[in-house]
Structures are given as structure tokens and as C-alpha cells.
Image (cartoon, helix red, strand yellow):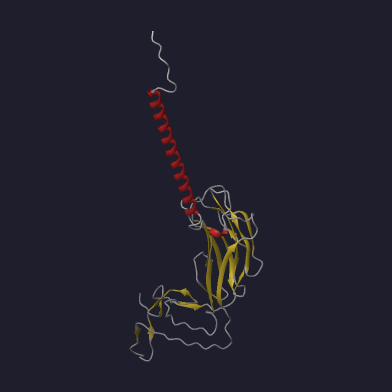
Length: 292
């Protein structure tokens, strides 16, 4: 019998198997780390695009007539509404949950005439004080549990009246009572920083039209301060053209003045007559006919 001395360590076969296993393990770990690193980088870029690269929430102001139509000009003493709307600006955002803000305006040109109206879904935890002239303080509310998406939504409106000729500039800024009046969005636990909220402004011009002396030349294509009482009127080629409802009726409109007429009034107007026919027996007389 021949006794062979055992060699210390692993055989060549075992070394080959171990080498392959270790290299495979290292390759898997390296790839995993790279994938994790790439995921972290993408997450960081996503946060950057969502926050620092653009605002998350928009607060927009608009003045409207009492039917909700946007306006940029209004007559002295007329009433209107100031409306606030909000939008979630995040890509695929779920909506704005809570929105509160302060609104400033020049009190010499406008005044609040009633309480704010809050619109669905922003009818929870309603807040706001409008008794201080020139300020709508801590005004806003919260929505419900259902997400709202990225559509612009009406939050509230405040009834107002134009009290003097000039420009009413409405400006908005962050609410002061925090965290009670934080701005919140669905899907995030933290409040939205005011640095990434767009606080809007709006300008409304108050004109003295409707007062005396009154003058209208229709050059702008609009019959300012005229209201139709009968028939149909339209401005055509700088003229206020009238059409009665029938040949047996008249067409007339009224000038809506914001001041009472004095005892003595002088009126001047230019009338362009159409379709004039003179009676054969009395050529000194004539009648006006607006044919249909």
C-alpha cells in the first residue's frame, strides 16, 4: 500500500467552483447596487421636477359679473364678485385638499357687500373675515376625502361693489395662521410651502360711464350703459342700429345712468333715418318705416 500525503487546501475542482460562485455573487451585488443608485437618482430627479422646478399649487383670482362671467371693467356703483380658484399643478396630481390665503385690495375703490360663498367640494372648515376694509383675511376652506385631480376648481366668491373711479388691484398672499390654514394637497402629508405656490392677482377698472355729462359715439363697437327695452339693437359701423319686433311695434332702448337727472337736461343726438317715404298729398310730412 502506498500512502499519499494529503495536500493542504482545496482541490483544483473546488477552487474552480468557489471562484465561479464568488465572481457570480460579486457581479449580482454590483448590479443590484447600481440599480439602487439609479433608483435613488431618479427619485431625486422626480422630487426636483415636482418641487423646485415648478410650483405645486396655483391660487387664481378673477372678478366676474353676478352671473360668473369674467370682467375687466365695471361701471361706478355696479356690483360684482371676486372669485378664487385653485389648481394642483403636479403632473398627475390628485388635487388641492386645503386652500387658505389673504387678499388685499384698495378700499377706496371697492367694498364688500355680503358674506363669502364657498363652493363644493370646498365646503369644510370654512374660514375668512371680510369686515376689515381692504382685506379678506384668512379666507379659504377644505375639501372632502375624495381626490379631485388637476382641474381648476372654484373655492369661494365674495360679493362686492365698485365705489370710486379707478383701478382695483386685488393681490393674494399666504395665510398667517399656521398650521391651521396650511395649504395641503392629496397624497402628501406635509404642507405645501408658500415658495412653491402661485398667488395670483387681478386688476379691475372702474369707469365713470353712466354719469353726467354722458356721451356715447359707439366707436368701440359697444353701446355702453344702454339697455334694450323693446326690439333688437346692435352696433354696426359705429351706429346703434334698431330693429323692431314687427312693423306694428317700436324699438327703443334706455340709457342707464347712475345719477338722477336734474330738472333741466339738454340732449343732443344724431339720427340717421332709413326707408323714408313722403305722402303724396303732404310732402312736408314724412314717416319712418323699418321694414322686416
